[in-house]
Structures are given as C-alpha cells and as structure tokens.
Length: 363
Image 1: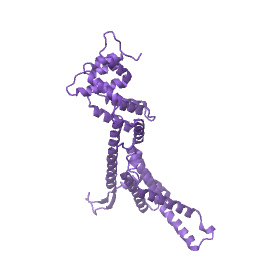
Image 2 (image 1 turned 180 degrees about the horizontal axis):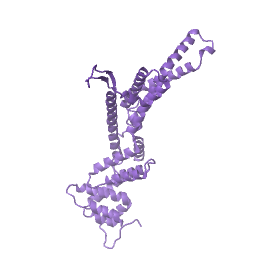
Image 3 (image 1 turned 90 degrees about the vertical axis):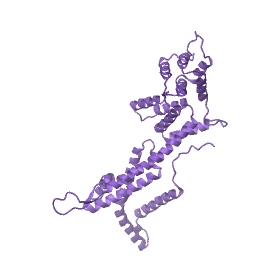
C-alpha cells in the first residue's frame, strides 16, 4: 500500500472548526448590532436599552480583548521564531494552541494587575504597555508582605508568577518539538523510501540549498560544505542517506518534502515499488566488480578530473575503523553524482581498460 503524502500534522477537529465558525459569526453579529443605532429606527424600548448596555459593557471589555489579541500575536511570533523551518506545522499542534491560550489569559491577567495598581494611567497607554510587555509584567515579583522591624533581611511573602509562566512555556515548547521530531522522522523515512539512491538525495539536497532565496552567500557555502561532509566514505551509507534527507527537510520544509513525494509517486511506474533505481543498480555493479584498490584506477579510467581522482584516492585508503563496503558505496555514489551515470556505465562496460585507452570524458 502506497503511503499518503498528506501532511502529518493533526488537523483541526470538526468540533474545533464549528466552534471557530460560531465564534466568528457571533463577533460579526455583535459588531453589526453595536454599529447600527436602534434609536433611528422604530425599535422597541427594550432593544434600545439592551444596545445601550451592551455598548457600555463593550467599552469595558474591549481593552481586555485587545490585550488578549496582542498576547496571541506575541505567542505566534515566539513559536515562529523558535521553529523557523516549521512555523505552520508548529502552530497546528495542540500544545501550540494551549500555549497561545495561556498567553492570552496571561496578558489579560497582567492588564488586571496594572489597572489595579495604576488606576490613574490612561487606558490606551495601559493596553499598549501590557500588550507588548505583559511577559515582563508577569515576571515581576509581587511582595505581598514584609516582616516588621529592623534586622529582618528575609521572610518576605511574595508572589512569583514568572517562574510558573516560564516553566509552562518551556513545557509547551518541548512538547511541540517532540511532536515535530516524530513528524520529521516520518518525513525522512518516506524520503529515503522514494529516493533510495544516495546520488538522488545528494542532488535534491544540493538543489534545495541553492534554490533558497533568503540564504546569504556565506550560509549557502556553509550548508553545501556540510552536505559534502556527509558523503564521507568512513560513515555508514544509511547514516549519510538519513542525514541528507533530514537536510532536505530542514532546508525545504514540510510542504516542499510533500511536493517531492507527490512527484516521486506520480513519476513512479505502476509496477515499480519504492527501493529500486538504475543508479542503485549501477552502484551495486561497481561494488561487485571493483575492489577498493581498483577504485582509483577506475576513476582515472572514466575522468581526468584531478580533484575527483584525488578524493577517490583518499577515500579508498584502507581503514580498519570503516567497513569496506561503505567506502566502496560512497565512492560509487560520488562518481555517479560528479561524472554522470552514463559515463560511469560506459567505463564499467570497458573495464579493465587497454594500456593505450584514454579516460572517457564523454567525447
């Protein structure tokens, strides 16, 4: 059975969507009721009285609604900065909704404290101050009682809501990260399933990095260098594949990976199954026909690029700490990626070469 390529984030439930729709309709109706005065029409006296009372109540409630909205915006901004690669996925988790709700309640509580302690301050100034700085206010230690007399340095009774607020914020971030980690692992597994060739993963990761428009030249070079380091022949091939797949996800995001998987599924023949590719078959042929010592000669047989041959020569050095199959697989993948599968396949067909045969440069 072909796995679905739909996003892994838990969608909003039907009940949550219904509640959101009803809430929106309620506020739209309330706004219309407050904007159009009933005095200008032939309305019952009781309706006019209700509208006047609702308007008076709205003037008292509006500061708290504004502060709550600002608190929600601050929470969304924090989550987006904490998870810059997966902002949409992070905001769709259940713990993110809980964190936003707690921020709303905290902002409203901070406004209540400010209005109690500084009632003479202008309401607009209170709303703006609390809306953007409620986290600092909630972290203020409120001293409820002090000891009477001199010589008492301790014994204060204080209320420290900031510690509780910080602990809950850390809990929310941790739970969101754990949920995203599970989704990242699923995405990496499916990338490897549909792009089993290390050369395919390398090419996709390379394109993903250079296609980013927001990366500086230094950041792009740093990430490309990190990608090249993952092709280390001393590392197991499975580790390299998983690390490159994760790099694709980190640089492209979940929506980009979903697009890649959709394309891979559409391009895959109906009778084919994930796990087989011509590149992987060519890698297997190289590993079966060539010894590790012959890898350098084979590289010189198919190309005259000194940089590639030097890399192969270094990678083919015997290493007791590295499995020989992993070394051969890494070299084979690099040859296919750097030289091209056609030239490598032609070179393999003419191996071993004649003494007067020149490297195949595709001419």
